[in-house]
Length: 433
Image (cartoon, rainbow, N blue to C red; front, side, top):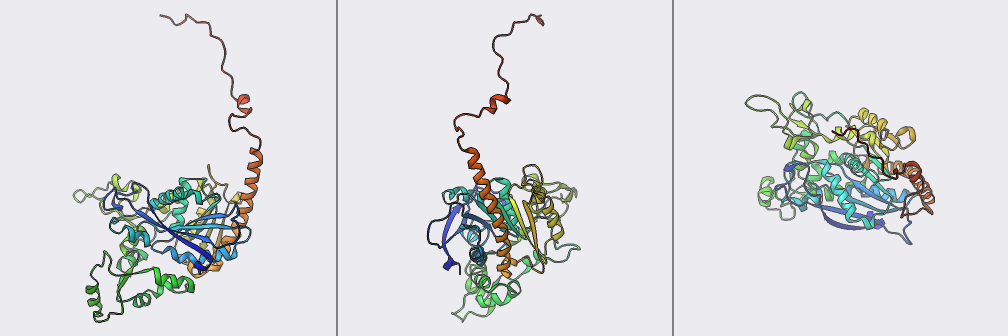
């Protein structure tokens, strides 16, 4: 259990100012709160100077507490490195953050907001986060942590991307000739039940194959007792289910309302077509990130493609842990691995040993909750290598800096830059009128 291995401290910090989309909040000046958990290992003795601070990001609608068994395994398997702390925050519209913000949230969501929220959080707690910092993200959290690395290229020593949602093609959009997908399921699913026990039974397909430790956290954190703003009338819900006379049970709903989960998965583009003329025109004030060539499609999601296109510039080294049976476009993800870090500003990529992929055959997208030990062990092997490199680089940096002045530039500046000519040139009358 995480409480046996970690001291868990909770924080509530402000989100970044001005959200990416004006429709994310009821009022554009609303200040959102971000719920954060800090997991500090229980240990005897001092913390090594090179102990890692992890910044972690979760998948859509998945409570951050589901990842606690993964942190336990990382701590148990850690060899060649130490863990200073693990910091994880719920996205502003999800889980505990969403509860704190429920009177301010509206029906839009940009993944970029959480990247900025995390940067703000890191600056807020900077005194507790000395280098090295390592980012670890699952699903759309893998996309978010990558964008945080784009925002601040030298922030992370390395990234651990667990089946990240970074690809060129959109998912099945679930309309027209597309087959129904997770998006359809999210919109049309039931989201209120007469009791927690009934909710667990109704959602057993999602929980199938979960590690018992994750399953326990799923039952506690994935559901929320009524009343909520979406379902304020408990008696009406009990009457719907015929449980009015039962005072021993309380109806429950999803901790992250399904509508917030939906708008995080996909974004609407319902107003691009003029109803009078039929002409397509991108509404730049609200949808500037849409590709004009596909503006006729009523749904889109910009971040997977835009993040993919910048992979060449990714500065930190990167381990891609890919689920062999993922529902994502695995071929496109693997193409992303090939170019990751290979361009200007990048790490050097696969040729320089700075990027690696590990495909786990047969594992699904929820592998951090189903194959906890294997996922943790895969990350540990990479972290051993990267921490060896980090220590070597730090030693060399200190040696190179030893004895250098911090008040004046070195002599090479004077060798490279020409001196300014002295004396006054003779005035020429040529060109006078």
